View 1: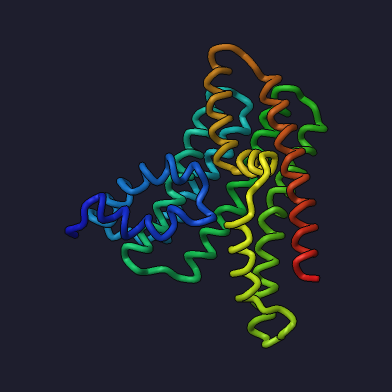
View 2: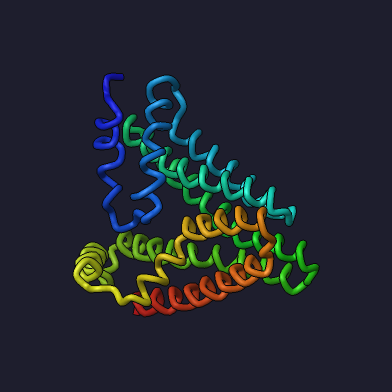
Length: 255
């Protein structure tokens, strides 16, 4: 391997770093760190991108699980692991792009990881608050929030699955390629409202991880468990509204 870190950024990151799906966390934080891990992996090991993906699923699940104990010290370790999970989520794609070995199974495994880890953050936070306040309502709410986050991803995935099946079936009802390109053009031209921009930022899972990091660090110094509860309730409300809105938009697109 002769490539430098700078070369790897061009090869492994340039295709996605400025894409519409890349979060601010990825652009300004995780991608700066991930490339060094990618460099070590591709230079000194034969580890596959799928192995990295499996690793980030395990690390993310452990991070979620540490929230279940209801202790600030464990929770802080958990959110640190979640940061590492977010970084590894970038590494697997970078390794695949460098080695030019992407696969359907790799994409499936990556999506499966997000179905497991992302909803687990809110469920873990709900159980954390249940341990703190011994309120069964919070326990039920944590399971509800877990389902809501799964459905948020499911609504979007089902939409693209539907138009993919429609295209493959030769059904002319949808002009899939034109629809997607037109939507991309509109989204790039249309200015977002301040409120929508704020909601999009808050709804990013990496933002929740960053906020939790700050909260649990402060909580170790001065107990602020009520703030953790309010934060949790706020995010449950946000994701519930987003799920309903996304369901509405998805149905509207297909009619």
